[in-house]
Length: 116
Image 1 (cartoon, rainbow, N blue to C red):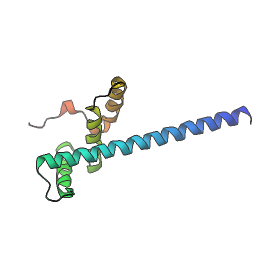
Image 2 (image 1 turned 60 degrees about the vertical axis):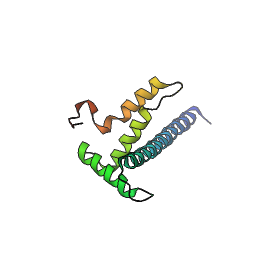
Image 3 (image 1 turned 90 degrees about the vertical axis):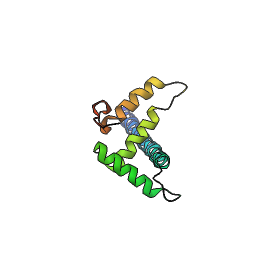
Image 4 (image 1 turned 90 degrees about the horizontal axis):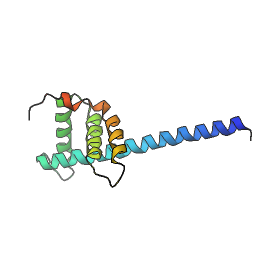
């Protein structure tokens, strides 16, 4: 095999690897967000059934309205928040850089004007 083909195959492999890694991170973050919304609904007493779908919908709708986010973005931002507050044995600096980038679509929390 000649050199340009090897470079092209290596480049294609890297691109596919990055796409798969991005998909895995996205799915993991959304799963963490789903769990965080579920826990929020349980703690807030919004659940009326065991599955807590209505409580999660209420919490998601409230947060979406409050911060101007879609339900999927609420789940994403809750997942990123869950990851950001997790303490790791090593790699916390890299986690901070990654979560700061993942927070970008969520908006700037320092400009939040909601009342507590």
